[in-house]
Amino acid sequence: MKPEIEKTRAYYSSLGPENICSCGYCRNYCAKVRGAYPEVARYLDSLGVDIEKPFETSPLEPDEDGYLEYCVCQYVVFGTCSPDYAHQIGDVKFGISGRHPDTELEEEHFVLDLYSIRLKFEPPEPIS
Image (cartoon, rainbow, N blue to C red; front, top):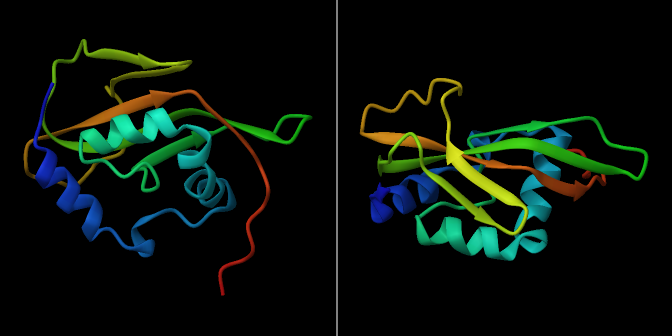
């Protein structure tokens, strides 16, 4: 992997609340993921990525215990990376996405997948 850390960091700094999905599941993820997965947050930060600003998340429905499993979470990273990249921190696995929505970015980048994330679901207050 050859990330362009400062370019990636600048990209995430430029993202405002309007760039992040406002559904309850995504808001739950953004509010809780850093505290629940601090080592993953530190690793992403080392790449210039803000864990609280995912490009895409894919949550399942809450289970009987009130937990949501996010089966894949995706982040944009500027730079290059081999398609066979693999990494793991605890139970969280990382790889390069072969399938994702169009990023609409022209500069060289890749989409990093991480999975799976499990968080207690507490519906956030409505946005006013």
